[in-house]
Amino acid sequence: MRLTFALVGAIALTGVTTAASARDYLSIAGSSTVLPFATIVAEQLGNNPSFKTPVVESGGSSVGKKGVCEGIGTEFIDIGNASSRMKTGELEYCAGNGVDLTEIKVGYDGIVVASSKAAAPLNISKADLGMALTAKVSVCSSGAQNHNCTQMIDNPFMKWSDINPSYPDVEIRVYGPPTTSGTRGSFVEMVNEKGYCKKDELMKAALAAAGEKAKACRAMRQDGAFIEAGEQDNLIVQKLQEDPNAFGIFGFSYLDQNSDTLQGAIIDGGAPTFEAIAEGSYSVSRALYFYVKHAHMGV
Image 1: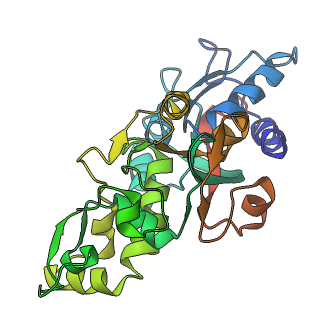
Image 2: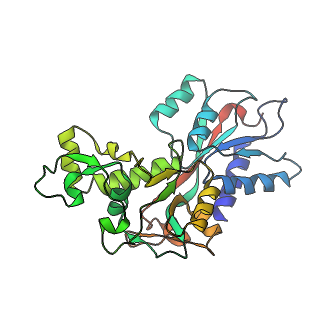
Image 3: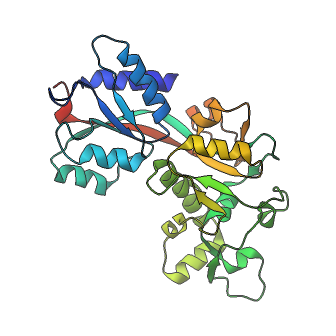
């Protein structure tokens, strides 16, 4: 609820009302993670006679950040929400279109790896999680002998227990967001890149030999171990409820809303909880943002 109140304040403080007389409501789009909170905010504002109910759409952080930067006028959204901060290239795209923005950090969220409560719980390190999902690993990571460890191969791990015998003896099958998602971008940066490739000595050597940087590890597997499930996180929730051996990647709010049937993996010894995310001790946490267009403020 604290995040919801923050979003209400963020919109109210901007003074945004409408882009022009042709449209008398706010248009907001972006992150599927922020969507549940933004929808509640829209409903609350709609109960105020001073506001028309904003129209809130999903599509992913990339849609929100690009959409708010595309131009000025009623055909463009007023606010883009995102679960990842705008990068230099995105800000330059805005400036090139004559769009000035106010960035508002509205809260923090954890990215969870969830599964059915009918499944064995997963207690995993961030390094091993990255090793399970990144497209390429060092040939020696698989336990191969008498090989040049600087050689990279397609990820060979089929079961969680192939990585560590203490992990569940089931196939690696993880549903997650597409490349347009801020959740996807944050996950591969924190887990694949920083959690695995920048810490694993075998991968660091293999990347150096190939002339690659750790960012190369952001590429996810495409052999069925990782499955893109679109921007509808509720569909991932449904998949997990139907398949006790599957895992899903999404924002904490979806785990919280389905805590009767789903559980979150413990990562680097920390469970995803409100308190751990708020204080920053949960290791896969990130900030959430609203990007408000100056030209549409108080018009």
